[in-house]
Amino acid sequence: MSGPGFLLSSWPWRSAGYLLTGAVTGAVALVVIAATAAAGVVLAIVLVGLPLLVLAALAGIPVAWVERHRMRLIDVGPAVDQHRAPSAPGLWAWLTCRMREQATWRELGHALLFAVLLWPVDALVVAVALLAPLSMVATPLLMRTVGGGEEVKVLKLWTVTTWPAAFAMAVLGVVLLGLCGYVLGVVAGARAALTRVLIASREADLGTRVVELTRSRLRLVDAFEAERRRIERDLHDGAQQRLVVLTMTLGLARLDVPPGPVADQLAKAHEEAETALEELRELIHGIHPKVLSDHGLPAAVADAADRSAIPVDVELALPGRLPQAVEAAAYFVVCEALTNIARHSGASRAEVSGSHRDGRLFLHVRDNGRGGADAAAGTGLTGLADRVSALNGRIALSSPPGGPTLLRVEFPCVRTDRSA
Amino acid sequence: MRTDRSLRVVLAEDSVLLREGLIGLLGRCGHDVVAAVGDAPALLAAVEEHAPDIVLTDVRMPPGFQDEGLHAAVRLRGKRPTLPVLVLSQYVQRTYASELLDSGDGTGVGYLLKDRVGQVADFVDALCEVADGGTVVDPEVVRLLLRRHRDPLERLTAREREVLGLIAEGKSNGAIARQLVVSEAAVGKHISSILSKLDLPPADETHRRVLAVLAYLRA
Image 1 (cartoon, chains in turn yellow, orange):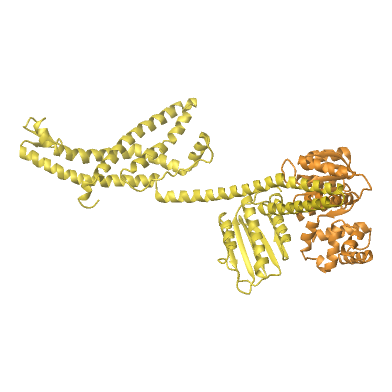
Image 2 (image 1 turned 90 degrees about the vertical axis):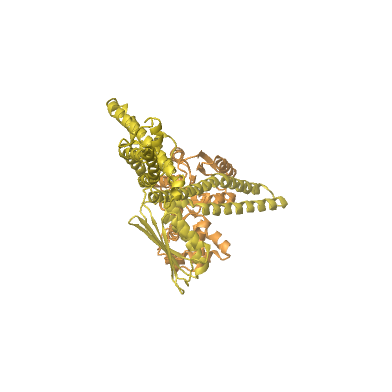
């Protein structure tokens, strides 16, 4: 805005356009909001007015929408809508979502301020900054037409009677017009900045986005867990049952067939089917262990300890249940840790302990191995860290050379009293 | 395969396919399925009505598809501690086995993987064993537990743990002797050594065997 280039650009006109449309929008907003609110108050006695009052309370939303679009006239930065998408389709979900949002009430405040105070200012500035210099520029023309070449009153203040004075006034008007261009720019910029603070602050926008991202990440984790359970159930109710029936049929057939090549083939088929069944069972267990959903984390960890190649002591006391996503993440962390210990640590004993206090689940997995585990070395630990951080948990590994190795994990979570 | 007696069986299994298969299998082996039901409440009612020799049930059943079958079995044993129950599970889980074995006095219960029905003869033998008041635990559970070296089992020798594992699978002394290729007397010696190490003083012989299995499972 510094330098004469500003006056030659489109910015003065954009500023003027911004303030002018602001004045119009503000006036319309005032009329509509006042009419809706007044009608609502009057009709509230017969209850018909209540929806109207709700409508008036939501008036900030369309006003803010228009304002954000208008802002593009003079502000290149994006003005992002801070409203969240409602969690469910339908008018009611939309309405409750909007009513709970801080943004809605900020926008209502902005709309009221705009309708009562800001638009007259817009109108005044535009009027003074444009009309005054323009009418001065037009002095010679006015003198020729309205004044009949004799005299003309400029801005109703000064009387000009001579042509040179009229032209001097016109030149003064052009200069003034240039100055007013700056004034328009400054005022419009200030107005846009104020609007941004009220309804499209970049910082608030960032905060909202972080919250939304965190939520969507949690939703993703939940969806992922639900999908695992669905796959587990489908395999269980479908393929596994059929394979059991198949092995049973083959087993029965073997009883009926006399020894010979057919019996041998049948025996082979029977064995293959049993192997397939066993592999499927392991696969299903790996996808989502049933004991975890039925009996919760302590039972599932005890089960994992049973399956571990080295002896594992489990000391995990958790009254009640934890959110499913946390239970699953904690379980897979423990499994992965135990696998790592068995594979790499050279430990002869491991211990899993844990507790829930102050709204957090704490898990410790330690071993008496040679230590030196490096979080950066493999993908295993990174995978664990990702799983944990998706639930806002923390993971810490202490593994000095020579051992012992201690893995600490914590999750923020509340106990649920989901019965087993 | 033991065919010395015909058992009256109440069967609970929600998969129609498997239910029909089991009815056929048991019929083929000379046993009589007096009622075949698809959920836990129906199981409780059927046992009330038919007073069977043994109950054969799936763990996971409607409506919740969690462990309704197991809970029904535990409830039945709570009412009639001597009612033999064989539970079939799609999964090997010590938690399920312990829950079942803690019901009643631990005799006449079995916990087997569903896969075992494919080994028809073994499966039907296990059924008879349970009906006769024995305790049968799936070899897979036994295998899992063998890995755990904890008190009081730490006092047992490897061979003794092996013998105890076979007892838990419901095998008789003769069967154990054949499997380990030793004399039946040697098995008897191992067993008395196990019983003394587990602090089970001489009493009724069958009962002590079951207690040893329970000690083993709870270790």
